[in-house]
Image (tube, rainbow, N blue to C red):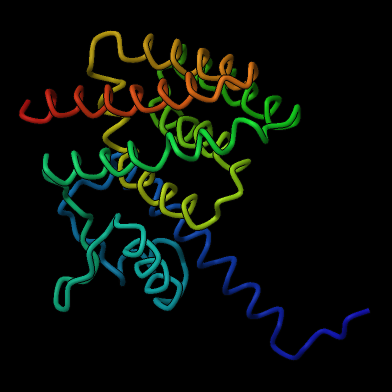
Length: 225
């Protein structure tokens, strides 16, 4: 049995508190309950969560690495506001990386991967029926990552995870406001799964590319409104 080192429980507790803080702040940003350009007050959050400022600062640094907040010397952490050009660039990056991950993943997908993706799509359908916008974004991200993990490209996957985190709140807007967007998303997600099951690499990669670019175009039309 490995001997427990002094201080190990405290370290694990600190990591747990910091991780929970990151998850809650990320949820607030992605759901829109904290607006773009809004400052996150360290003292106020520490009081609200009943924790010290140390895990709050750690959470700010992690969210900054994800691009969800920007750290300013005097204002602290501010929720990142993205311009139309920023959003276009993020989706262009996704369009470069995700079809490649799809090509690499399709031949390596196993029955357990398909079972997981099918469960995600079932939950996605339920979220759409219930109008649960928060769940839409979370499940959309889960769906994409569940397919890409089989590619065994951890560095690319980490980049895509960051891009998905940055575009998630805008994807929710697109699904909620663009006519027919949810119907198209459901249809394309299901079709992509069929191509993956068939081992049709080219069709799966092409559909992924078109899927990402369609969301980008919808968003760029919606943003001025």
